[in-house]
Figure 1 (cartoon, helix red, strand yellow):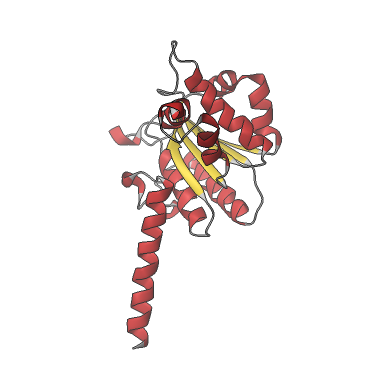
Figure 2 (cartoon, one colour):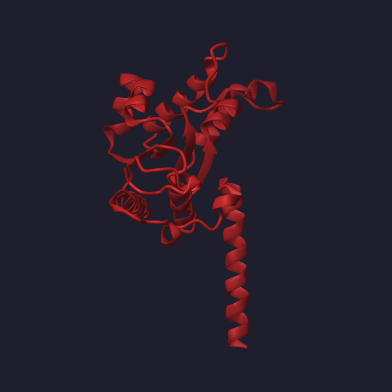
Amino acid sequence: MQQSNEKYESEKNKRILTLKMARAGIPKRHVNSGFSNYAVSHKGQDKARKTCEKFTMDFNARVFRNLLLVGRTGTGKTHLGSSILKNIIIKNWEAIYITSADLAEDIAGAYRRSGDSEDEALKRYVKKDLLIIDEYGLHDRAEKRPQLLESVHKVLLTRYDELKPTVVISNLSLSEVREDLGDRLWSRFQHDGLDIVECDWDDARIGGGKAQ
């Protein structure tokens, strides 16, 4: 009887976690991604994992700061971001993963939706305990639609004002992200503490993964 109850509770908890991950926007490809199965073959990857694990532990202990993951495609940045998110929502924090392009479109296009507005859309992302923005610098801007990138920057600025930590993931280099954010936003983004992980190894999707 006890084993039956334990099995029921275990399955129930798995279902709850699966539902939370879906609501948090974790990509299906990374539902099973975690720190334990993040491939480490050199010091750079080991440092990246440890930095993200420490960020997660501190967050769960209410020690908040921002995190920036930058570097080449296929270096495991989304894997690490998903691992952070999973270990945070398990502790009942409200968190969400979204690409920068989807974030920009949701806010900039809010006026087209009945009962929605830019302010309401902005609040949806500002109120989260943790926001993970992936693919910053990819499809989140257009020459004829400057409001797209402005929307992303507005989220970052407002979360700073509300003392809410944010994780930004980008294939841009550190210097490119800093230039793209501008002096004002970059200053605020690092003001309350900022961990930076530079992923400068080869694309694991095409057989890489070794440090250069």
